[in-house]
Length: 193
Image (cartoon, rainbow, N blue to C red; front, side, top):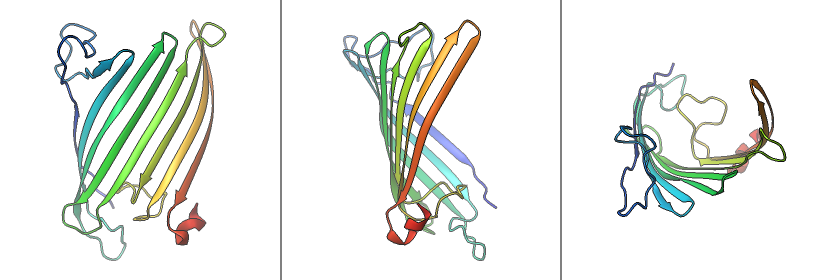
C-alpha cells in the first residue's frame, strides 16, 4: 500500500523587467502570482520552479521489507510561447528534476522532461485546427505510485501526436494519432521495451 501526501509549491516568477518588457496581466485585479513572463517580440519566457514532497510507506516497492521515506522533488524549468502570427502558436517547455530520498532508503536520481506543441488555427477553413506535439521524458525511476515501468531503472519515453479539431457552432469533431516509445538504457531490461 502506498500513501501519498503532496505539498506542491509552484512559483511562476512574477519578476518583471522595466519599461514594459513583460507580459501584462490580462485583467485588473488579477492574482498577485499570475505568470507574467519575460517578453522579447513575439516570444515569451516563463521560468518555473516546482517543489513536491511525497510520503511513501514503501519506498523500495518491496513486498517483504517495506521502508518509509519522504521523496523531495525539485523541478526548475521554463515554458516558451512563440506566436509569430495570429493563427500560428508554438509552445515549448523543459523541466530538470532532482528527486531526493530524505532518509536515503533509495538512490536519488535526476530526470529531464520536455515537450513542444505547434498549433495552426483555421487551416484551410474556419474552425479547423491542426496540432502537432511531442513529449520526452528521461528518468531513473518512476512515481512512487507507478507500476507500469520497472522500478529504479533508467529509461526514456517519447510520444508524438498529430490532432485535428473542427468546431462549428455547437458541433465539435476531433481525431488524433499518437505514437509512443519507451526504451530502457540497461540492456538487461531491453526485453521490456
